[in-house]
Image (cartoon, rainbow, N blue to C red; front, side, top):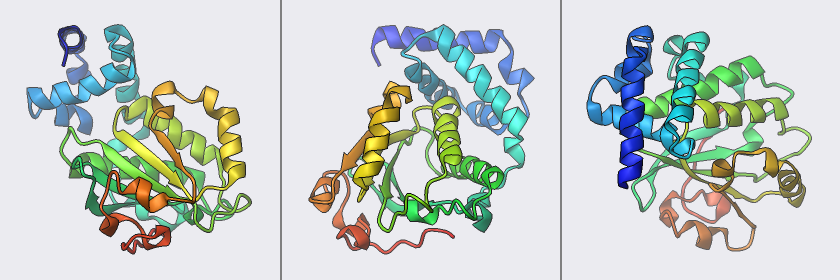
Length: 245
């Protein structure tokens, strides 16, 4: 970490302590995780700092907003298995594989989201549940790589803009710098067209992590990051994943 970024982190850590945030939110799981070690504190706060371009003031506001969100949402009471709730029609799993950079590999099937059956409230809790599951299962410094597969995708059945917007906002605002990269594969051209229209409203840092891979050469592109054994068989790889529900 460059000296300027290290100094910004020191300023943020001091501000958080001076404002007694760890005391005010002492019952929160995130605060308890931070207090396990000074190294964990630095890893977590540095995520907020990086997401706010190393501006300590903006990072502090973002961290306070995160703690307030977690308290208001009752994150402590959200179970780590809730993302498996069928009412969520939740499309993501941890594959059990890691990238060549030792980042946990996630897999999602867009066709698993059914807007005619989905409960937005349950989906919201499920997404938080999944992020909490990842946070408590893996090393604090881990970032994740995701393959989001649009095989069998239906723009009529599998699009719920409210849930997609909520998911993006929660990830950007309250779980910053957890996602390393997301590969969007087998996507229809109409979906990419919609993305080009809305992309200016998506955080620049988030946009930089999206990689749209056309249908030709999916395996070759993904094998830059993961082994063929980890790539879903629907994409030409060897893995068979069962995505809930």
